[in-house]
Amino acid sequence: MPRTASTPSNSLSSFQRPALVAAAVLGAFALTALPAAATSTPAQIATSKTNGGAYLKALQAADGSYAGSGLSNEWAFSAFAAAGTAAVDVTPGGDASKNARTVYRNLLSTSGWPSSSPVVTDYERGTLNAYAAGIDPARVSASRNLISDIYGYWQTAETGYFGPSANFNGTVFAALALNGAKTQSGQVRIPQSLRDAVVTRVRANQHNDGGWNYSKAEGNATQLAAASDIDMTGAAMAALCVSGVPNTDADIVQAKTFLKGKLVAGSGAFNAMFGVNTDSNGWAVSGLNACGINPQTGDFLTSMGKTPVDFLIAQQINPGGGFKYLPSDTQPSAYASIDAVRAVVGGGFTAAPPVPATSGAPQWVSQGTFTSGTATKLALTVDDGAGGLKVCSVSLTPTGTTTTLGAVLDAAIGAATPSGCVTGVTPSSGTGTITAVNGKANSGANTFKVSVDGSSFGSAVRGQVINVGDTIALRWGA
Image 1 (tube, rainbow, N blue to C red):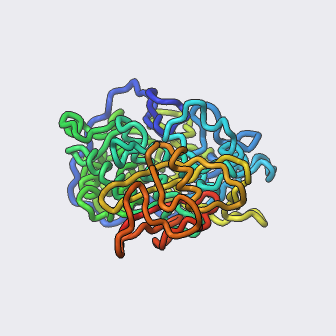
Image 2 (image 1 turned 90 degrees about the vertical axis):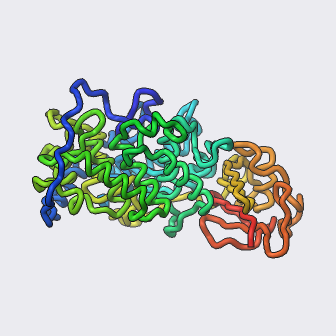
Image 3 (image 1 turned 180 degrees about the vertical axis):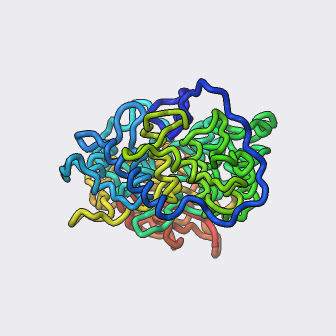
């Protein structure tokens, strides 16, 4: 994945291309009448997938790992899933005990992961790739809940942003992770009010040219007028679409127009901010894929019969199967290869895990219950029904294999990040109906209701059973 030098190297916020010494290439040629058919055939895409997958398997370390210090290769899990390969089936030398999924889950479960000074994009990266690997990101272990980890970076003073708003891509990838990493049954686990708040911020950061960049532009006329980035436009488009925005929406159409204007007619490359490269094309194509927009027809088939997928396949070095970062390179790049494989096979920024080929291996692995006495976290939102949305990660130490809604809300009063998510609950004990939260009381048909992991909202009672990894949403209303 592309990355910048301004953030920790193992962070998803470090997305940006490696520095280029060459000047940016000439702008894209104007498009005229478009041929009707795509140029990369299903057979060519299938061959590219097979060879690219073989290269990605070769990136696995002898201990079974993909993630490690520095710029790790764990994004391979999202590419594998999109290509139909289960991470549990990826093993070094056939040693199933070191399969990629188990090794990654063990890493995510350690108290030292991701670092001593984590940022929100660390957890977003982990969420997207755990999901693709078949690890429920909310139930990695008794103590690790990646969804709750992301909630902890909610910006109370800037509703809708995750992490410092200046680093806008933290909010984009929060949308991708929280919406894209669904429950094991395929349900979006976060409430609509949270989805809407993040969508509002993504829209507010769209530049005048129809695209987006890595830094915040909202409220800054100079930044809104600045040139957009191909990579981030792909990611932001995907963030809107996985949040439920249709691809006919005006902001998606504007983003399509921006990308179309950056096409190089002779190759199908996008003329990116730092020049033509595989990563930028991969991100743009993944954005189109996530929005259900075919990158090989219509606006993305050039006057010379080339598409963005054609460009990607042209960067593949065979028989090895890896992809070059720059057209002038002679050796493959791990990051370029991951981005390219995901895009060529039709993937967005994560994908549901395939059913494993390994006999007896489940599609999903997850922590089944709380471990009594082991500290953990739960993701909580509180919607007052009047536009006030609070989001937090609640720390608690369960005393059994399950807990209760009342116990979670009580814990949130003194152990939530950010603080102030819950300031009071009535009643303060027992198992009965919750009649007030944060000073707002039930009134007639307008009462506090609860949803767990995206379920329908129902009556909120203190005694409701809460299980490990549950994503909890409280909402006041009819």
